[in-house]
Structures are given as structure tokens and as C-alpha cells.
Image 1: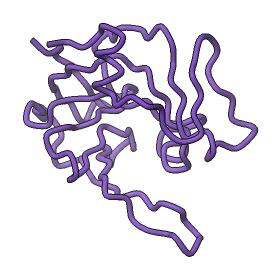
Image 2: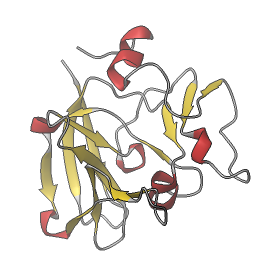
Image 3: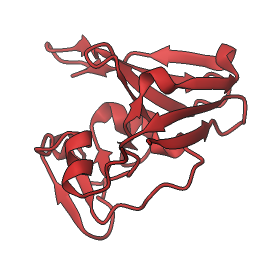
Length: 163
């Protein structure tokens, strides 16, 4: 059975739950969008089952943001994904993309459930990271773009996929 994740925003205005087969917070994205919405070095997203998302409190506080890729360049365009956040305190809650409607990606920082620690981090979109941003300490893989494994594939490969 998938792992139940409880989540909330910083002000307590939004509370939610969802089920996840892929609960290990192992992948840090350092793209410009994740750094700006997630803070200093980027965001860590988990995988979840979108049809299991239940909002218990604060649905009226949840707003959506569609990021801008390649901002300020000739290639500028809207992302296909939507990031949901609390309009009270600006906590990033989850990301959803119409290309994979069965999945939802909660921000690990919004999850209150104790998560299993990763044995190593996978740091992606390093080509987008400014030099002053430091990768986390410890064992890690660093990729200019993305690693070879999907979130599900990584969990299965490392024996931490939750059936």
C-alpha cells in the first residue's frame, strides 16, 4: 500500500493528504524556477497519486502559478506544469502537469510526515545553477540537466518503491 503523506503550509491555513509510492526526497532541482519559488538552492519534489489528494483545510487559500521557462530570452514560454501554493504564506504545496495527470508532485518542504532519508541526492539542472549556489553535503550525483531515472524508476532501482 502506498505511503500516506500529510502536508500543510507554514501558516497552517492549508492541510492536505495524499498517497505516494515514491516518498524518498532524493532529487534536488536547481533550475531558476525551483530556486525562485523554493528558496536558496532549489526544490525537492516527491511523487504522489493525484487522485488521492485530499484537501482538508484551506482550499480557498490555494492559488496556482505557471512558471516561465527561459525568462527574458527569445525562447521564453510558460511551463506546462502548475505549482499550487498558499496565498497566505506562499508555501509551495505541489506541482501538477497535464502531461502526467495521474501524478502530483508535493514539495518535500510541505510534507509533515517523517520521510525516509535518501542514501544519496540526485542534483539536477546544474547547468541552470549559479556558481554561488552550493550542492548539499554528502553522497550525490550531479547532472547538467536530468538523471537517467524517473522518480518511479529511481525508487524501484534503489528498492524504496512503496507498493
